[in-house]
Amino acid sequence: MFRAASPKLFRRALLLTQQNREEAEDLVQMVFQAAVTRWETIGHKDAGEQMAWLHKVLRNKAADFWRVNGRECPLTDLVLNQIPALQGPDQQVLSSIALERVLKVVNDMPPVRHRVAYLRLLAGFPTREVARILGIKQSTVRGHFKEAMRDLRKEVGPMLPDIDVDPSAGPQPPEGQ
Image 1 (cartoon, rainbow, N blue to C red):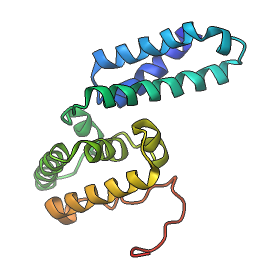
Image 2 (cartoon, rainbow, N blue to C red):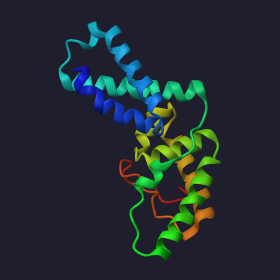
Image 3 (tube, rainbow, N blue to C red):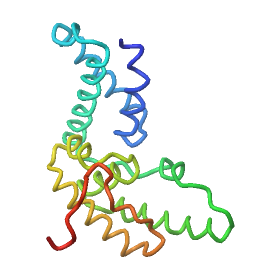
């Protein structure tokens, strides 16, 4: 089980640690230590249930790590790798300028808003998952995300794509309700 689960857990841990390999390795090790100590409970489960348990523990350990350390990692090349290639040099320059503005705004956000923006925008987690990872309510995630998008639109303007919609959230009430 551990050999099969390790690569998937490590990839997820990299996202949760903002691509910090050492912290990701530590998280995966903590997950496996938890599995060994709880083997009497999870050993009889099927492979799918064991994998779900490991991912749940990883999410919780990452949230604990963020709460205890209370520090932020600056956004890095992960962002650059997620931006689609643009056609002409003028588009590339405009995109580069917008990206610099986005990174500055997100890095300057208060800690929880920074984490919400990172997890929603860059890691692609839905609101429900961000709430679980950070140990806060979904409404709090939505509020921080709304504020983050407001700040980003103010700084970046029309170059920012329309990314307010959370596909997992279902229908949303109109603004002001």
